[in-house]
Length: 148
Image (cartoon, rainbow, N blue to C red; front, side, top):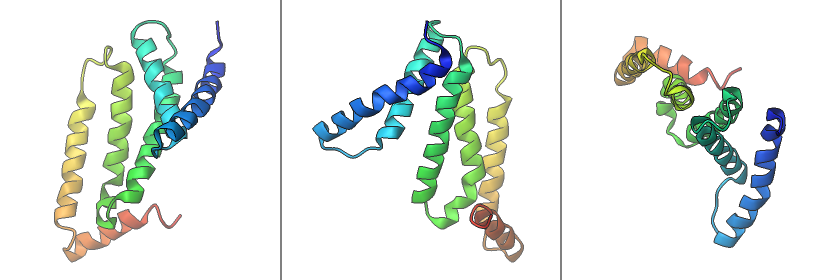
């Protein structure tokens, strides 16, 4: 049996050159590293839910890489004023990944109610972003990730 730490290295290392060839054959553009990681966790997630593997941490590591990569990809594409929503967006991505791993074991979905409230609060701040008191807070939230 292959050790889990070896799978962490082996899967993307095998998928990377295969996807690199596929990308050139299809003459398309996509991030080969990202695709390697997504295919790794998607395959592992399927194996997990089918009972072939039991290491949820292994799946979570790969999914965490995708969550972070997707977060930064979207962050680089959205308009500056929408960057106010970074926190609820990142937490939502993490909650989706967690739910994908543990969906058979989750009995209560309190995290989704909390996320709805969080998105609502940020939407309210966004709506009133031009009010002077709120404007200062919005600027601080948006600038938070730039000035560290």
